[in-house]
Image 1 (cartoon, rainbow, N blue to C red):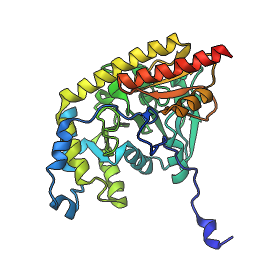
Image 2 (tube, rainbow, N blue to C red; image 1 turned 60 degrees about the vertical axis):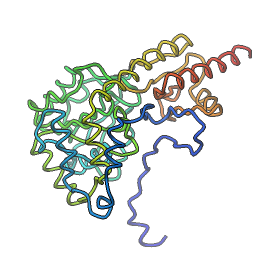
Image 3 (cartoon, one colour; image 1 turned 180 degrees about the horizontal axis):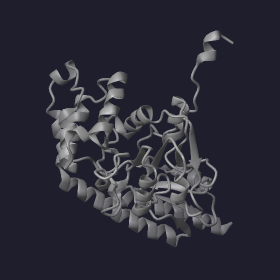
Length: 358
């Protein structure tokens, strides 16, 4: 072996959802919003001239930071922005998870969490969800080096009781508690932890523009916390890469935040389709976990998840299947347009009819 190979940092990388080159498909596998972003976004991006490409972008992303601060009613010094919530979370992991104690998160959750820990040499422990795929608050009332909770959780779609979350935050005043709210806009009002930030100085709330704002391709995420915590994250960010956000992200993201009516109307459409599709799948023999997201997590009572996944893929309908213990029979199905979900249901009915004839 070459000597340099002994010093390579080897990790098993995060595997994103498949992005097929074929455009003649129904793509329900990566939780993208089926509707376009606000028309304000394209107008703002098109207004940028060549100067925005020739010059470095604003390293503070001040326009976007201020738009988010105003939207959430906090000071600009309490907002951090990054290249998608993945970048934001990565910076948080680098900044705060540096003790010898284990960082805690669920065994069935966003699969990037353990990847960051492995890459950054962070000690961690995956805590099993209960038999109903829910977090037990008691499991997080132990000594730890930090806590990360996706709420609503992915890939299950289940939202945690807010009072249980408060109990975890209060019981861990010496640890940073990160609540990853990538899907919170699709949940009922009042479920977010943003209103807890003034009370708990160990809390960080992370969000993304990829789901509810239809901007997965623009890559925008953000965190809100205390001014002290945001400064510490920025210190690490500026030590790593001063220019994480480009001009397109800053202008497009700011425009999206300004169009709240459009934002709310698109969420309403997704939620209505989610509820209708849930009922139709249940009528076909699926067990569907209660979802507070823009996807459904479901398994059939007779047919394996692998078989349904392969059948749908052969028929150009892409959903997500995880080859992971406990959830191998489940499929994560992104909510598409009504027409796309109708096509999904029709394809599943054809498969069930074929199985019934065997």
